[in-house]
Structures are given as structure tokens and as C-alpha cells.
Image: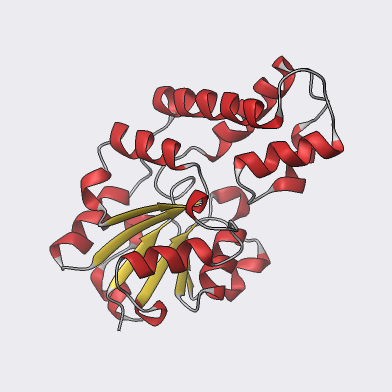
Length: 217
């Protein structure tokens, strides 16, 4: 029986996914790092410090360290998200529903903890979550299951009691590897990606999320 629901953040709670690419390109340009948006595919799912470490190896530049560039990107994406981001449709409705029905609620994101805390607070969502975790706290980020397992442990929940809500393929793989049920809510561009076939269910938006749906697992 599902007792616990664990949310991703970027692209699931908040429409911040497109803003990441814009921030990365902007800061890369400011630091004369020879990289294009097409090459971002090489680092999909990696944490931002892993991304800039990858850049330093494959697209070396002079000046700031990889960590300093990552910190700049974080500053930029947090600022951009506060200005241009929104809470996605159905998010608060789903959180209120779970809270009213006494489910444990967690957040497990690959984003830096500082970014998670600032944005969740900025958009008024902090009070919904019993536990907020970042891949910063574990050795490996998604698609490794560590961040989901860590979140479940902090919630005192077993993996088979957990339902993961994700928008990305890497997040889905992480949830499945953690032996949790996974529901994907992809954006329109990636909705028909055949890789999502391994998810336990797929929704157009969290507006379709209800108690009958959760109890079906």
C-alpha cells in the first residue's frame, strides 16, 4: 500500500527546466566556454557541479574554476526562476489532497539544496513537505536511486510504500531502480518518448491526480 509520495522539483513542481538551459548558455558565454545547447545532452541528469566538471575536461577554458562557474549558474537560475517560473498546473491541488488524506510527502531533486530551499519557499510550497532532499546529500545523482532511497529513509518509509512523481527519463529510471512505483508527467515535447513505457503510469498533468489514482497502486 502506498503511504508516501515523493515529488521531483524541476519540470514537475515548477516549470524551471527550460530556464536551466538559458542560464547555462548565458554563464558559459560570459566565461568564454565553447559549448552549445546541443552539447547539454552529454550531461543530462548530472548535478550542476558535475556538469561544470565535465565542461572543464571536454571544453577547457581560462579563468574561473568549474566550481565558480557552477555557483554562477546557480545564482542565475535561482534569480531567473523567481522572475519567470511558475508552479505547474495541479501541483498544489495534488499536495493538498495528499495532506488531507495523511500521506507522507517528500521532495527529492537533483538540484542543489540551496536552489531547492529558495524556490520552494519563494513559491509558497515548503509547508507541504515532510522531508526535502537534494542529490547533494548522496554520492550519486539521478538516474542513480540514491536520492529517492535517502528521502524514503528520512520519511521512515519502505521503497514499496513509495510513489514517485517525475517528469524526466532519468528521474523515472532512478525511481524504478529504487523499487518504487513511478508516475511520469512529461512535458508536451517529450510526452510520447517510448522510454516512458517502463513507468507505472503517465499523466498529462497533475490535474489528473486524485485519490482513486493513488489507491490504484
